[in-house]
Amino acid sequence: MKIRTKFRILEFVIFGLISNLADNLLSLHFLTDQIINPRIILGAVVIVIPFAILEELVVDHPDFWDKFFAKFLRLKHKL
Image (cartoon, rainbow, N blue to C red; front, side):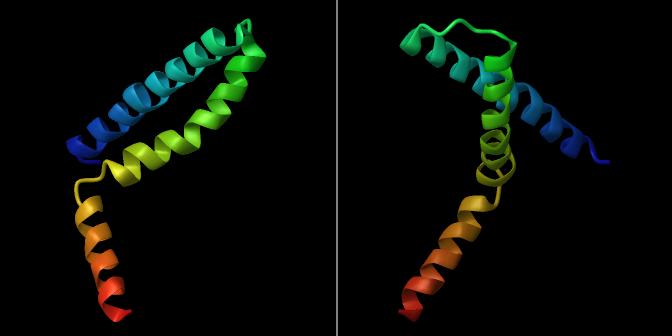
């Protein structure tokens, strides 16, 4: 496995999951006055994982926006 791939996975785990989980838990606590317990944390983790995967592996991919706009422009010209 390339060092760049390892770094990307590490970045995904640390910045994607943990920061999004902290954001969700803080928002939940301050907006609803909900006491944070293991059940709440588990629910937040279940919600965070798909969005973290989408954010880190798809949207933050170096070629994502180039490919997205190229495909979008091709579809627009066909119409």
